[in-house]
Length: 284
Image (cartoon, rainbow, N blue to C red; front, side, top):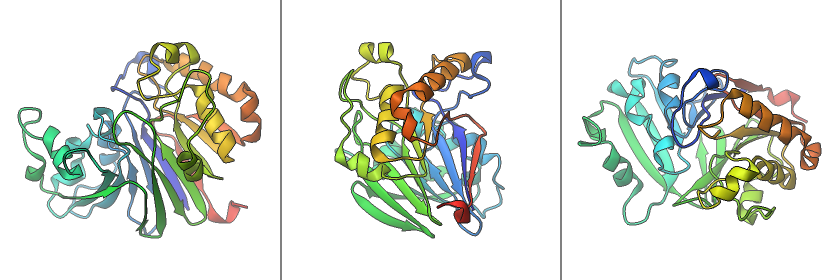
């Protein structure tokens, strides 16, 4: 069995309020768990703190983080992840190669005074950093393929293959233009025939016209990526902080009614606390 749980589904900034109680206001953090395997964390946004509340703080935690990029909304949860406040805990962090410094140096830059009261090296747990770009790595019984994704700054997407289940994570994806359906070959290969694609769906078409260079895409583009790649289930992700529950509902319904959606088994909007369970024997 493979469980995929959403702990943070927002983009840009946390935005908890009465208007988004159902979908939640924490930023990107998705956790993959299966019996007998260490957890795999996809991004380390503010949702990471809530995942930490489910994990014993008893020096036993060992996990792997697959970080898409280093924008704040994807890493702000790091110093608030309670298991790493225990000596003996270990988190292996994979992320894109940076320009002008190492991945470890980049992370340590924003977790130190004056931006944070203590430095990363003062946290009792052990962090190990690994730079990736076009790589295939083995994490326990999972094979992880890494590929670059168009965004602002070094960014990658991840394809996790475990027990016959394929989960792809593309949190931030620059759409080429307002009416473009072009998808890079690297992204299509990463997403090909996935059981679940977790994909950026921050804007509607009108919003994209005003923010076309922000590094994100429309709901329509997310559905088109899934269609072209032959994806089974699509999770609309990285919800805009200005979108309350009702607006996310509207965008979800719009996505489900698109012609491109006909080839997909399911389209849903990611929500905090939602867990999807995949039974290997049920996959045909």
